[in-house]
Length: 525
Image (cartoon, rainbow, N blue to C red; front, side):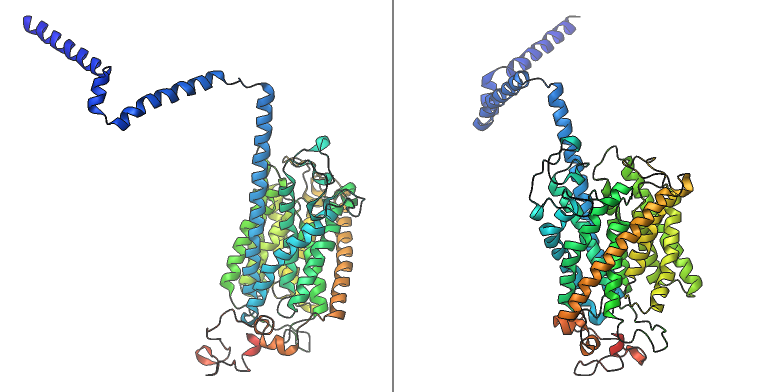
């Protein structure tokens, strides 16, 4: 017992000694360096100031919470619009790869240069004049309130009745004006890029640049105002959620007229009207381009919400977009297999793009099953459209007209067939389509818009092409086309130093010791 008592007293004494040393400044002086000793009072001061600040700050009010919530919503919506716009911008890389791979190697530099410079030109044209003509307040046919160089009254991100400015057509989205402009700019650039592929391998570089400026600065904004700028088609109830008509069909009509005025490439058609294959030189990069475009479409269509909301509409649009693209690729593969005897990779690529183009107008208003059917029909159409335009001797090296024009029209009409109105959260929304009990009214409006936009685009594009043809001449000489636009227009080769393959010669064929291509190879390169 005595031992236990002694042990208890010893332990209690040690506990007191330990606790007392932590409170003894001398212990710290022995254990810590002067630097660490100085940190202790500083830490205590900071702790006391933080505590005072926490107690002294004004408690939040309902008004401050509401303002913070509104600002957060604007920030999230703006971030979504900008990211979606960047995805659409990245589609330029897809078009670059796709068109270059589909063309012959002697024109690769030319196609790359056109696809690179066209967005720079689109930026200038749309900033200087296009955006103002398309979205500024005006009449049913054109924006007349200015807005050139992105000037004019505007209090974005205010929406609805709170909006005060000259861009009332965009007062439904609560993002800054810069975000509105950027998102619409990348769409305008896409329309110009569509033309590039259809006129490839024989157009003068300067003429293409000038036409792109005219298209993005004048023609595209006029029809865009009719639909997205509060014009007469919008008043009539025409709907195009993300641009089957506004972007793709407009680019397709302009491409059609360009290919028609240019004429076919040398060697494309025989005297009896039959077509010769001028094979693509690199299907690897063409396939890469198609995959980039597929990715970019998830900005193109879902981004057209221009706001996040609760996210359900964005998810639904991504679903319908992907479904249509997938079914378009599958349908084109099977159709080509049956009609052409082989699952042609170029048809697989164009079938994918055809499905994506077709669903662009109705993506927010149809269910996944309808999107699958829309995409499948698009995949079938594109295969037969390529043959159809060949019979008309409209030479389109990449199938841009078949993809964007034919399926832009089909997708616009499909909205009138399959629309389920605002069932999926889109507002405003069209009436129900013919197959969902809505009758023919929405289909008729879609048809009216299609022929109206097509008519004015054909007219304006023809005027532009005729003016260029009569003044500058739009086509390179036969010698330049034979040699290739890389050398004739740019003075360089895309594959300098690489051996050129010559069909029909054993061992892959090549060039002469001096590096000159044999005449038998030239039509294929």
